[in-house]
Image (cartoon, rainbow over all chains, first blue to last red; front, side, top):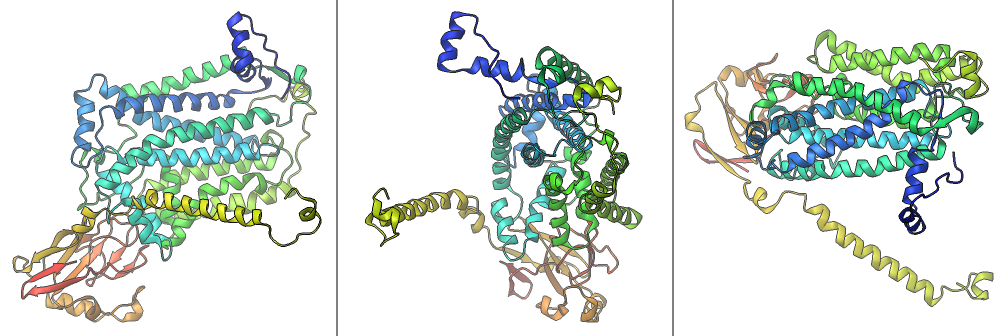
Length: 412
Length: 176
């Protein structure tokens, strides 16, 4: 994907700037002339959507911060003040809260896209791991932000999540006290969560820059899963081709985002979070936001505290090992008949865990959660490595260009 | 390191080597000294540590009742147990307990059970007089505690913690 810049400065100022800071040619090479595989389908628009959502969350977050007060006796009221008194406050807050959900929706589709088309395989391992890092930072940011309104769910989410660290042998309690700044979730906790919630998005921006850098070194994967061999035959310039496609994707995505924000802004929320935090009463049924439910189900499925916590973290971290767990040389599931079936079973398992995470941890729900949690880990540790060895892949096209000519193209 | 001698045979450490090591060690020490306050500031501050004790008047708690008081920001359950409840708590075989502890070790006077009301699993507050043993039941992840606040089933690893407390009068305790 590397090569000499095709950019030629046209104005006098551009020539002057180019000799001092070649930012114009850098932007041109990255977002205009950058070669993208010509068989990309609509699953490749989520990178642009996620970039858009990151900016949307930072912009709405910064303006909400101008009205929010991170102090236990004032936090809940300051959020209500945003809802009632601040100009456009209702919409800004709903856009930010539902923006988090849309951000996670996009990142899950982006991750499953990568899994289906084998985007993590050689030479994109570092690109994939940076993605896992971004995902974990997103989870941390989402959790910290959920605590800020200081409702009952905020408070008890903070309690449960910080207590996960108390499972660590010997130093666990000391670590939890250190995280909380006290012996329970209180003002010190809220204050630092606010500081970190403001900080982490900018760290995400930095890691996203590395993620995009790594992407531009290796080039994009594509539905055929074969590398670009001939830039002229296999690729098209980013602008207008990818730019336009991304614009269509963002527009469609915005329809859903706008519908949530304007018509059902509390659909994904929990009514208990409109009750101010009360350290002496735990709500009878506490659930995290929908995007944490599968991991929450894994935590609850295991009847031992330490092992449950280890399983929770392992279920996220294991995705970073995917490039080495998937033993198949063929990238795209389009040419992998066995993996293609297993992929959809895995998607169903993840959705099933999400459903069970929202149910009470008892009876049949608990047993289903155990079976699905076991399958989740088996998928990574046993099924993927084995499928790579026993599967007979269908013939892979010799080039991106040939994959289109042959008819077996980009679609899923 | 540029002289020929040192390149050919690693002779005695030179003055420069010692300076490098000393400088490196000083820089590492200074970095640790800078990081320490940045980390330690997150621990509980002086005002949080100052709120470390609470007094409870027990005369207002009738037999069979549980009162909840706040100590260090956490709820503490003070339960005035009935003779039947005391007997039930004392009669449990230690082998039936995941975290074996006799009732007598958890109370100072059998009729008064004082425990921190925080589930040892993930910190929720269990509900009193619920669950299989009529002790406590944690609604978050289903841990069941008995009449001595001991874990009987569910994911919690240990019994409800007994806070440090003392009887400062016949009917008054000081927690912390």
